[in-house]
Length: 396
Image (tube, rainbow, N blue to C red; front, top):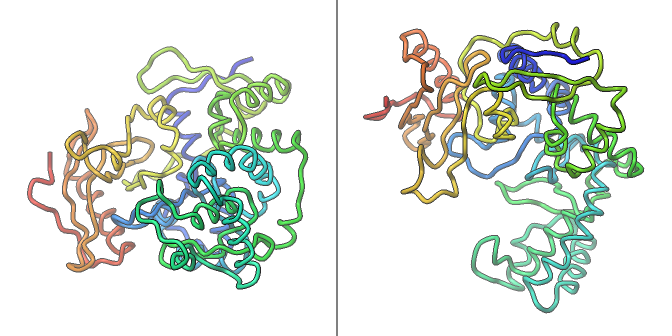
């Protein structure tokens, strides 16, 4: 038996699963924030602060009473969140730490040889030296080692201690105890992760079951490739085998894509139909999303569901960019309606709007522009600036 979903229902389900269907003005305390991060699974971390850093923006888009200090407390004081890798650096519930030990093991098998090649001699000595200093001295940052070994350049030319710090973090020996500005503060994992999480162990079989089942729960419906890509913990082949071995727990889903093409075959947990029907419609208001919002992280899935082709152009040469360096998606109700190029000018105290692009068929009606004004005013307050400034030529 197959569950048939219209494109509207597929969008509604995914938005609800991604925490975007609750009223964004609802109260969100520290406990509610931890629950939200658990529901999402992870929140991507990125250093770019054109308006606000990605992790803060992702959470603000879902609850505009979000407070940054609650996230800091959960990660740096309470130990309920930790930083590590999914498809990229992310904030993750510490309750998942036992599963991440399988990622640590994979990193130990695959990173050492590749990273050793960056420094022809002394990689192991650097690892031992860094570990010994942190064990003895406590939390340290990369800059605490720079006086010993300074090498100019970017991440591709890390000094040996920086390489060792990242290797020890990726392989689980070190954890991020906090950040100074945006610089990582490293400490021994057992001094950062609470004992109840640090000591947890799971078998490989239980790890794959959790990685696949928890991904499907957060996606609502998915192909085996989408299941594998959610956490980036298991391979597509492992996800395919999990689907094949759990067909009695799953049902096929046929969903209509945004372009009205051939229905897309996916899977959901058996009996999901009534649960999907009960999920609410998202609020009708217009919202600015982070370029790293998990709703859009899987670009192909986002294009199939929303008909929205979105790429981050940070690493695209300026002359080849279609839109701009850091352009924000715009969501209204269950639709992606455009994108906006804006930047917080903190010296001037303004949120500067450089350019607005609406999607084909989306009108710049007075009501829509009024809703955009309201959202940009909220974004300005969140970014800590006083007003919104529309620059010449902002309307395309």
